Amino acid sequence: MPPWEEGNDAPIPSPDERKRQSNFTKLKAARKKVEELAQAVRSDAFDDWVSCCVVTAKEPSEWTQARILYESYLRHAKNYGRNRGQRAESVQELATETQWGRMMATLFPKKRRRAGFYYQLRLRRGA
Image (spheres, helix red, strand yellow):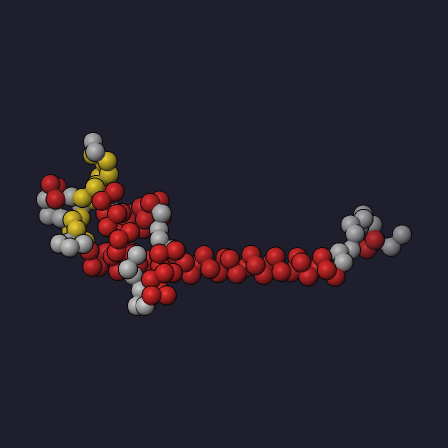
């Protein structure tokens, strides 16, 4: 028996099966690319929210609870984009609380208080 045939009992996939596998591979790659681009949209909306809606608090009494900041982010991110199509896409790619918390952790320290986590930030008027 030739060495290239030893232990090779796996059936050779049919052309239809190879095409199906190829399609799934392409779909998986496309989904990965979409997720990467979605992260970019999320980050852009987050950066825009930080620059437009929050300022550093000077006193601990001005610190804002994380939940209130997250709700402000959601309101702002729903309107992020230059046109209706971009805004619709940004709504689909809103950050979850966990994703938002991770983005916040890269920029701001948080403090645990009795009522929850607080950031040394305050919302701007109208935000």
